[in-house]
Length: 279
View 1 (cartoon, rainbow, N blue to C red):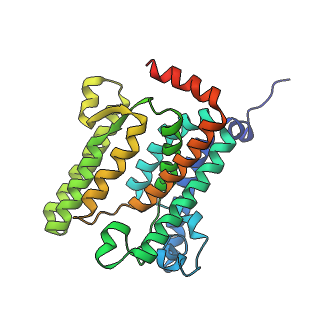
View 2 (spheres, rainbow, N blue to C red):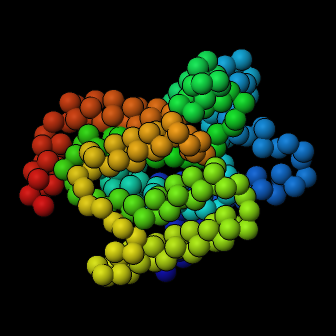
View 3 (cartoon, rainbow, N blue to C red):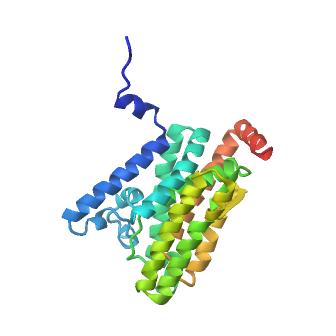
């Protein structure tokens, strides 16, 4: 008798990373639809620091992880999750990966809310955010996974696709100086086109073509430093729509958990070190 391959078979054999990406996309679409019919629906799922410090809307510590500010925000976070998540899942296991993804996302939200709620606003607003500005996105959880991998395989060689990041920063800086005129709109279109070209150039696996995306090869331990520190410095002078404190909170949780796993599974970590040090 031949066994049929139904939806249950594919779901069972699907990686946790893929399931999380599907869940993120479904929630994003459903939230967009519900937002058309429910006034201020975003207030019920986005994480607002001022509310969290008052003990209100605590469920947004979870729902905000599955909501994004737009398609591009969702796309880049899911692309990052796809590359980093699959690698991390293979190293630490499916269940441990899922649990820590959720926990690190919640910790990232708590750090984001506490720093903005108690220290944000006024002169410190650019550093810690504002208690009245909501945060959404899975990047806090993703930085948590990055933190774990940074400790477990610090010498694994990876590429930071710097081109799109630089383009987005230039766009934000230009908007802060010149407003939202026709020139800025054209710049936004150009940046979006460049980003998509960069992504496809990396997926082409052609070294010459990939240079369009400005890939920077580095040890994995250096990746979170390069991804956070420059944006924090720029954010001191120009307001960026990026939750650096959430990224830091998730990363800190990942570093601590990675250190715990490194101590608990010394032999396995030693084997991983020997593999990536030889590359």
